[in-house]
Length: 277
Image 1: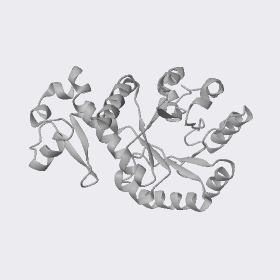
Image 2: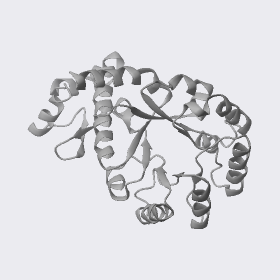
Image 3: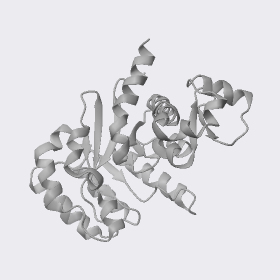
């Protein structure tokens, strides 16, 4: 049973409010917001602002990423050096396209390296091979590898990184579908509002206190009911998935969106209370 909850939050989304996510029974991994900068095409997160926040709160987080610059290896190096010059210990980010020699250099200076460029590309030709090669190199170097944005069960089972994160938790509220973890098959079952439910799926849903009537009801997916409906099932599924991965030696972090932070504490407390009963 999980005793602590692993979550990842982005400074690019929450800014200084990231400090409000810290909880006694949570391990919080801080993302710098580099992807936010990349998508915006400008510095939403500046080095000075991020460094200042880390100087005040960095030691309270489980780990924190360096402010890398996607597609700019030299910029990554400059920012990493600037943060280290302040006495900070950020986790460097190995981007897709970098040479293995760069991974070697990172591993010499840090016991952990975050691997980017995999999320959203697992169906791309060559990506599974690339992931396996990078993970193999990380193991040979003896460094801990964190896969950024990767929650794919097959990938995590195959390469077994030290840790990984994904934001799949909140998808049920957006698309009226939810991935339900089945501990018997050790896999997810996709459930959506209009599907015809088999007996085995109905039995599985009952273990999450959900019924076919719930699944067919819009209010279960939206509005106030979602907090004890679709979002609760999604959260509990993710917690059980985390327990499964922990037995494989993988620490999984739930990447929280801004709105998710507000209710995750209640969902976590609900789960802990139910498991202790």
